[in-house]
Amino acid sequence: MFDDPDDYRIGREIGCKLVSFGSGAHFCLGAHLARMEARVALGALLRRIRNYEVDDDNVVRVHSSNVRGFAHLPISVQAR
Image (tube, rainbow, N blue to C red):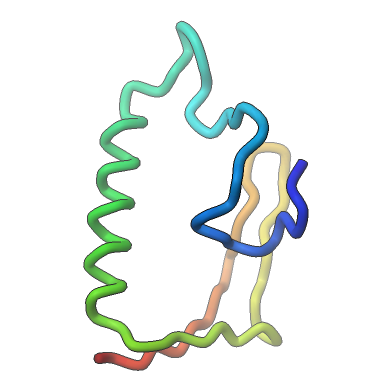
């Protein structure tokens, strides 16, 4: 679906319809709140950190029929 699907790229061009929050009659009622919360949280985090580094050797991924993400994602953060 995406080039390099395991890389997080905030500016990634999306050429397809995502199903993260469902669609039509089954669209998630909390989708707008979730997006706003993510925008506020990431903005606050980015204002407070200078740099970060992911410990790639100790990342534990979760892949199932309904979840794709991380069970363990160790990150070192350098504050501003």
